[in-house]
Image (tube, rainbow, N blue to C red; front, side):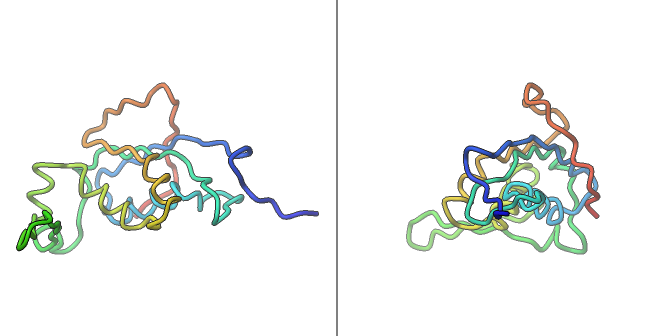
Amino acid sequence: MRTFMANAENIERKWYIIDAEGKPLGRVAAQAAAILRGKHLPTFTPHADCGDHVIIINCEKAVMTGKKAEDKSYFHHTGWIGGIKEIKYNKMLEKFPTRAMEYAVKGMIPKTTLGAKALKRLRVYAGSEHENQAQKPELWTKEIR
């Protein structure tokens, strides 16, 4: 008997919806990252791109525990001298409600070509409506605490 190794020919991708309403942002992001990598599958192969598509809805209603909502900051650099910029989580949620979830998932995915391919299968929406009805996505039923 031979060990199964996933490759491009024998991978079937499914679509899953994760509802982030009332759930911690980091826990939702961790579950989404695991699905994007394919770690929920019994046929997970570390060197192959065997993950599924993920749609995260209600991102603006995800919660942060403790004082993280006031204390958490996101930084980026413009490329110019002294060009570091900071934005607090509360401000980011007002201006860009999906970006905090995208950053959280991106931080949990490997920084390789496999990770870049996995991030292309992530769709994040602020509200409960999404544009991927034609793909017949399934609701992710495992509990996210």
